[in-house]
Length: 530
Image 1: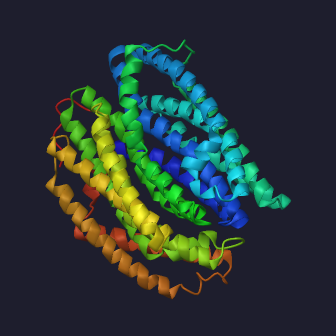
Image 2 (image 1 turned 30 degrees about the vertical axis):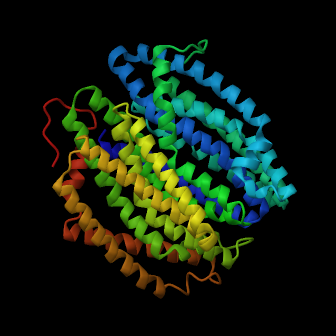
Image 3 (image 1 turned 30 degrees about the horizontal axis):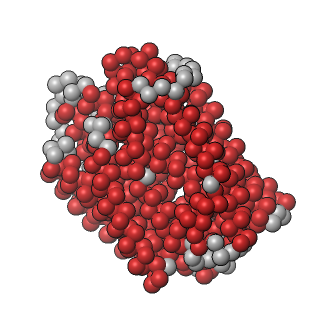
């Protein structure tokens, strides 16, 4: 299967999950708006979600996958199975102890980390603590799920791992639908959602475990022991966790600051959900596929193929995310109005969320580039360099968020995260190039410059087109008419962008054919990239 087809497999599954995520957030907006229960739920959910990204997805996709790939190359399936069981025993034990400790310390964690701004509101604080206690075991489920995902990705079984997040959205949509049907209070709705998160975590873990067994590996439980392989994994995992969770770390910092303003956490979450669609479909797909493919190429000594994979991945990333960024900047108001403005979600809230979304849109290419650049370090078992870069960007994010929030509120938080994302991407890229790990291609640089031109042409065209459809996009229009008008705008933008990109040489059919035909597995003696 070609590299792009693998991107498409993961991206397609992720797209399904993100579309369901939109449906979930639309129901959330109607049921809770940006009220206190929405703030409480999102604040409580952010904490296990942060740990999941830091110590599950980030750490395991960065540290576990290269080591697992190495075991497959050197010891075959039996060696990989033994390594997996060693890791599973240690991981399960650590997670169990961590979960117990966090449950007991949850009031202090909410007061000092999750939402210090809630301390002055006794009811909101108490609800957030209780919701967080219910949802925190989700971390344990998802950490084990991340390990199973890493195994499947290394075995070139991408779909099951990519489709598993669909269960979270399906369960939460069911909980919200039931709450709306019953006319439940905001507090009861928040409780339904919290238990739904836990149920979804168990379902995802079960699906991935079945996928691993179907791939031919049966994992048994071993007594936790610090074997050399496990020690190596932990040595790589901590900096990888920090690096892989850069976006989540910055979002947690933003949440801590935003908790001092009513409705700010929910507004940031609604904007985050929209830009997560292109970030998930492109960024996560590239990150998930690129790491095991790059690790295998490097372990096999195929340096030319590794360079090919990196350059083609960056080409793919920018080809799709630059127009998405332009569209989010130009029609953020229209997107937010059509998706959310109903029920408890007011026009004033639309203005706040849309302004935040537009700024996130400018940061989108940087966020996605990080997903494509980190594997260049992780596949070489270097997790410390990106961690140092990440820590620098976190400091920058903190300074900007604290400085800008009093002036621009939610937009200030988004600006801090966008600047931090671009700084991280730039430093990662420069470091890879200086070390000779990312051979520069003049053809790629020219394509990127032309893609930027195509994006600007598309943005200007979209600005004028949105004016012609303003009446159909107004809140007074029927929902189906609004959706049709928004779909027409997006379709028009795609036609303009792709037409200009192909016309001026930002993309060509030869490039598409090369990417579609290119095999991810290295072939000895293969020629250089063009």
